Structures are given as structure tokens and as C-alpha cells.
Amino acid sequence: MNVRPRPGDLLVVDRAASVQFAGERALRLRVVSVCDRPTYDGWIWLTGYVLDRRGEATAKREVFVQLAGLRPVSAPPQTDRHTEGRSRHAVGPGRVRR
Image 1: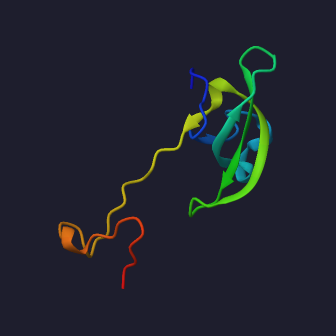
Image 2: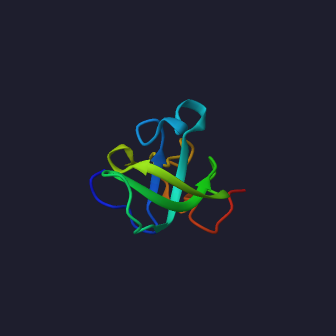
């Protein structure tokens, strides 16, 4: 990533961003703020919420990472093999499948 993240961005923070986030310590971070304080060239302070697999916030963190190592989370396509192609059965936000 070459552009400074903005509040609302969802990023993968892993070994590419900092060695402290290698392997199982990698996380998905929803950016809340980007600090303007001076740092080493190419590094940045981010504040955000760590998200679990369901996309729910589990902790608020401040992380010091390399800008070039950050990447946006790419959402996998959400298809249901039972309802694919039948829009009348589609489940949208706020609806519950029964």
C-alpha cells in the first residue's frame, strides 16, 4: 500500500507490515485514525479495532507498521450454493435465514 490508510479502511496487518505480526499474530484492523506524529520513513502509527472472523471488533489497538506492508482485506464472494441464482431467497443485511 502506497497511500496512507483512512478511517474506515479494513487492512491486513501481518509480517509484511511488521515482524511482530508474523504467523498467528496477523490481524485484520478496521482503521479508526492515522497519527500525524513524525516516525521513521515509511512507518506509520494506526489506531483501529481488531476484527474476528465474523467481522466483529474484539479489541482496540494502536500499531506501528510499515506502510508498504499493509494491504486491504479482500472480501471473498458471498454465495450460497442452495440459493445461488434464486434472488427471492437471498439473505441480505438484517434478514435471517430460516
